[in-house]
Length: 137
Image (cartoon, rainbow, N blue to C red; front, side, top):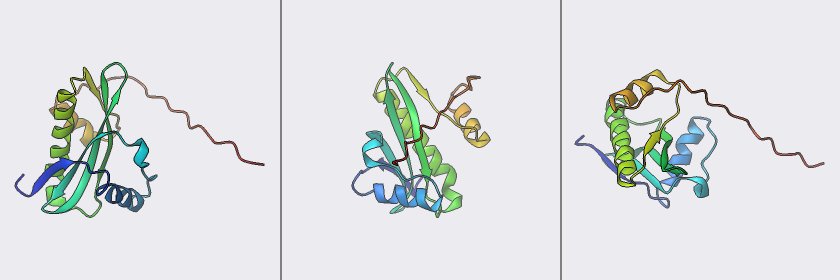
């Protein structure tokens, strides 16, 4: 990974990049106050290429949160960028002495990458309920 560097996410300088990438992907924008405190940004040379976060939860559990890549990153460095971010999240979870690290996805390649890092694929079913805001009359 000679051209890829992983640094701590800087909320002042990297937040704009994160929202720019989300906007390009037609995803909801991030809220700075809701981002986990532990995060990392991957750089190719001097250019930010991706972000990932570790959300600490009750029960000494961490959640791999908000893994976002720059849509314009050099494709040939995709593996290095993703691998670097995954390793940093695992390292941070270990440093925080978390007992378990969870990740949620249906993407086959992400599942295969997780298996390489000894994640276990659970048969649980994740449920979600979208809470609609009441409309003003």
